Picture 1 (cartoon, rainbow, N blue to C red):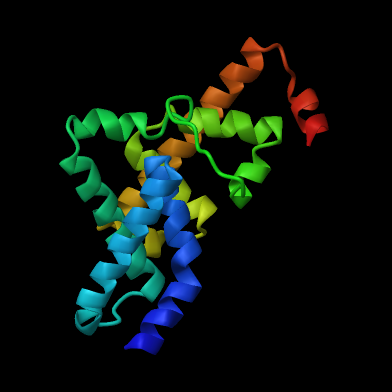
Picture 2: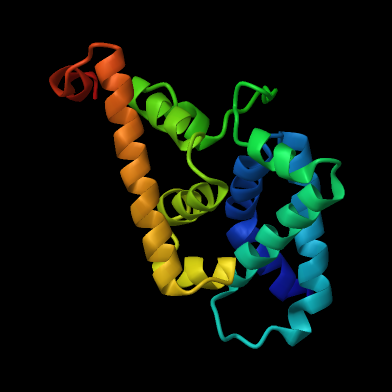
Length: 183
């Protein structure tokens, strides 16, 4: 079991951490929740049937750990919504995450701001599909949804992001040529 656990940890630790970080917006809390994920993995691995990939299974556990964390909090629904607002919490860390380095681009910063205005479900789908590159079926499995719900939520999220980004571009008087030139 130790070698299997070590392999799971080495392969997916960073992905699980990033997912939880995006959910709770706190490095320390994400690290604590990652530990909880792997405690649950140790307890449940014997029951893992292999019907899904290990990565999908880990994301499903991570999603449940995050939801359990929010439920334990006073006013968990409000905290869940606030957790996606980067202006509410500041992440203090000497080593930036890869996505934090990418935020230097104005267009990407704008997209992350717009993502904060999407629903929680839309954010989870976008994070899993585009940041962690899970397939539709893996995302559906991790969220305990149907593939149809993932596709619909993804479609609505992308439509919302596009609309919000266009509004910001229009508001700031930027043309699509200026945005493209900044790439």
